Image 1 (cartoon, helix red, strand yellow):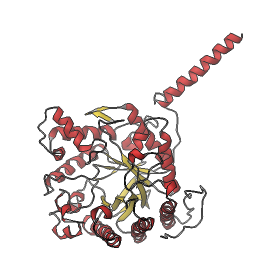
Image 2 (tube, helix red, strand yellow; image 1 turned 90 degrees about the horizontal axis):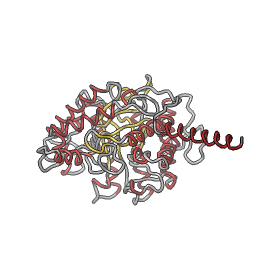
Image 3 (cartoon, one colour; image 1 turned 60 degrees about the vertical axis):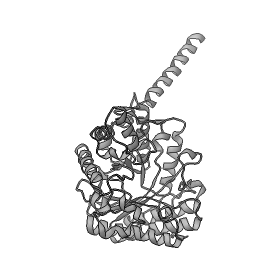
Image 4 (spheres, rainbow, N blue to C red; image 1 turned 180 degrees about the vertical axis):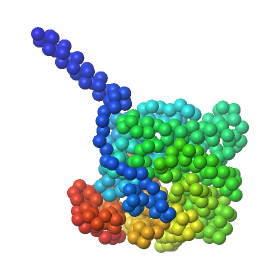
Length: 434
């Protein structure tokens, strides 16, 4: 009898382990309760959800899919999302690509690692649990995580005549087919946890064609413009529910000669992109800019950098309203962490004040997204701008205060966002002090 009991116990334990394994690997899908969400829409220069204005206070954590591949490191994804939710943030920008490297999503053209795809599934679900939406970028102009250079390498390995420059990414037919294949794979992916296709997932705020596209071999901008036209039409043919943006930094070229003075230097005139031209397309729903005054204007004082930063934002917001009639989202901005805390807080306050004034007046600045938030110990994803929330209480307090006042602006029965450090609700918003 004892032996039989032990046998039944062992069988039961093995059964539980086996079922757990199947669940964790997506072979068994359990019912999951997630917050209801509507899709974000655009009307003129504003975003709306279910008929109410939607303004953004967000951040970048590009690394979340990579950290979600291994079960032990998924806690970093949950922690950074908890940090964001604790500051009242409502949008995170992250990568929906990783080509050929460690934990690659796309190992070679058209061949994907299902475990990495399940990691992206997990990121989407965990963000939605916290009422946080995602801006998903589809590839990179830079070398990190593969990007256009990896696509060119793949084409060259397939004997395509791609020339000497990675910028042939934008014109080579083989590479364009590779990219379209990736876009289709992402947009039609069915989440292994929820059973919802990405193209039908309201927690996804928008798609981004590429992070910081530049085509230096054609400074006229014609090559990049043709690529944006083709790829934006293709994305919209697959997904009519989500918003789409290009992923631009915001530079002007000769197509907008009167605006060249807004560039941070003459070097920006010849990168093959133009803020107005690239965003005018009907298939592009909103404009984006990035802002790094300490990189772009390294030889001037912080006071001059701050003035330049504010002018950069204001110029693009005005162009969004008057020339594009579309929202403008600052999808990356920051100041190096080696800068004084006061300077970083002053830059944050300048950005958030501009965003709040725009929201209060119904203008074109749709919000801003800090670059970047990082969990402690993830040095491999770090850079000169990374902020570990637990180490930066003044920053997290200021970010949370901005979230609070945005919520109060649009919700009459507002209860302020959960404070980051005390994890309890507050009824008033702190002023943005530096």
